[in-house]
Image (cartoon, rainbow, N blue to C red):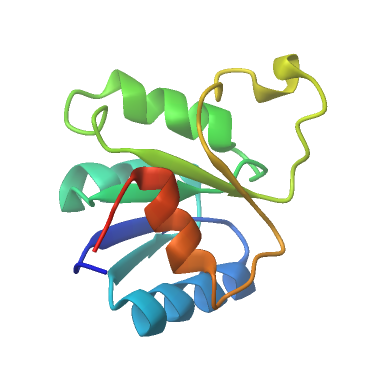
Length: 125
């Protein structure tokens, strides 16, 4: 897969570390991390990643609020987002503002994560 820069926003240290290592070692992508929605929005604006991998359930600024902030900012609104979450969306209303975004479920397979992200984003090669 081509070299890409991805921002991973997740409040769980172990998830960030496993996902970061997986994406760096398997896909050879540069992975930036943020431990909160607010930090993620700031990093996205400053670093302009090729895509964002976003957790849904975070304290404070959750995934929906983070996504809304990214979409309202002209500097970040065109960055594609993929959800990485343990949240199960039983009803369409559960998505509240996250409709149409691809979901990769936790727990994820570290050896398949890069392939899943690339497929979700339409990245080939």
